[in-house]
Amino acid sequence: MKKILTIILFFVFILSACGQKQAVPMDQLSEDGKYHYKNEQLGFWINFPEEFIYYQTQSNNLGNYIDMEYFVPTGDREYPQTVKSYARAVMIRVIDKTDYDDALAEDTSVIGFEKIAETSNRLYFIDFWNTVPKDWIDKWSEGMRQEIEKSFKN
Image 1 (cartoon, rainbow, N blue to C red):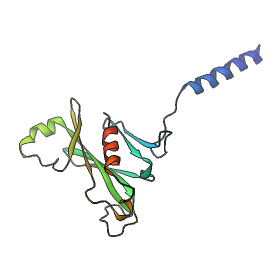
Image 2: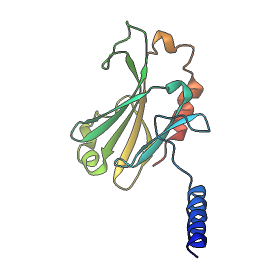
Image 3: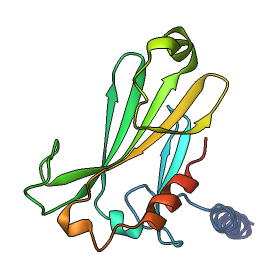
Image 4: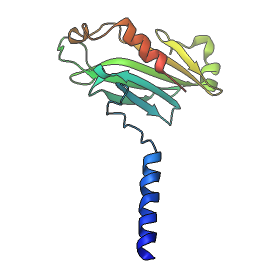
C-alpha cells in the first residue's frame, strides 16, 4: 500500500511539474529568440532582440517620474557612456498621472520621448538612442526599434 501511494504521489508531482510552463529569466534568451523583461512594480513588459545579449538595466527615481534605462555592451570608446562599456539603447519613462496633470502646462520631462501607453494612473513614454555606437551600426535597424516598441505591454 505504501509503495502504491509513493508511486501515485510521484506521478502527481511529475504531472504537475509538466503542466506548468516556467518563465524564462530576463537574462536568458527564450525560445522565441527574445529577452523578456518584466517590471511588476512599474506594471510593464518589454521584449528585446537577441542582439541585446548581456544587456543591463538601471532604474532612476527622479521625483515626478521613474526612468528605466536599458544598456547594451559596446566597444566604441568614443561613444558617451554613463555606464562603462555600455550604451543606453532604450529608456522607458513612467510618470504618475497626477504628477503629470499638475505640471502639464510647463512639463518638459517628455520632450524627445514618444508616448506608448497609458493606464488609469500612469503614462509610459519611450526614447531610443539618437546616435548608435560604431559597433552597433550593423546590428541596429529601424525594424528592431519598431519591434521593441511594439512589444511593450502594460
